[in-house]
Length: 351
Image 1 (tube, rainbow, N blue to C red):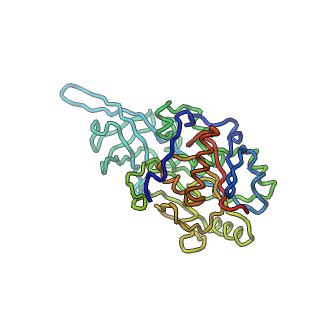
Image 2: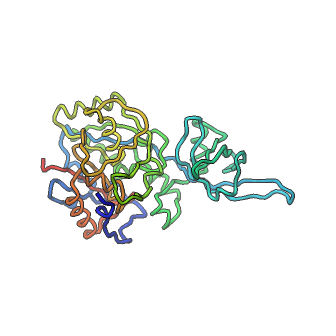
Image 3: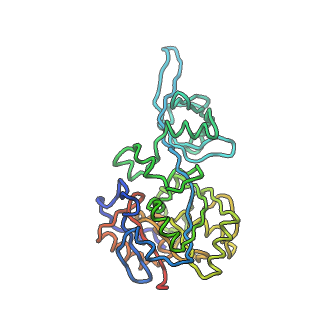
């Protein structure tokens, strides 16, 4: 299975840099079996049935991009250097793994000041990443980070424009609860309060799980034989209650439909034993064609990058030929791609 099998031509104009407004006005490509229908996200109730269950990732994106200064005293007086920081993930010892630019401008033991209330000390460097210990923790840290930080927009958006205050709302789901992600579960960005109410009224059930999406989600695949690719690990949790709800839906004949590849990867990790079960830990599950899905009946997701692991995931669900036709249609019909783009509802069978 070659990397080139997952390539396609994507016009630059189709890469979205802002989301649709209102959220549920985004377009929705519905692929059910071999058929393709053009719709909108607010039409989602038309495609779901009472007893279906949407699985939602309740992670909260932190404003992980920080700009600070390092001060150093020397024979010629005090010198300052601007240090740009992107937080990657929290460590068990209370530190944060982070990218620092320029890394050569700071030494272990030195402090970076981000605001009057927020600073961090570089405790060490490993594999090109810094280990930062902040002066605050808990709610105090969250509040100071919200003030000083910017949302960590995906590289293909950040290359076109800087993050701004709109992104602090746009790049967060309406049900975000548990802080820790540095990238959004983007299919979930299409939901607003009105759409959630419509779905509830129709008898659609919801289950919340947590997967803290890491910056590794944007890493390219660098091997030609995709089966040798090694996935990054991300922390997730499926509670006993969530596992029971999913199992009950399947037993009753309802469909389990994760919203986003993050939710899908998590519940399939929790079902590796054959049935969904309570689970917590780091998952590096890699889903590509040939994978056996244990609990996923359909998937709502955005349109993904060429040669990406996420394109491989949807190809595993729908089949490579069908995904090729779906993406050809999406390009021809001017669907907007990637994190702020439009959505698809992928239903493998006609049922």
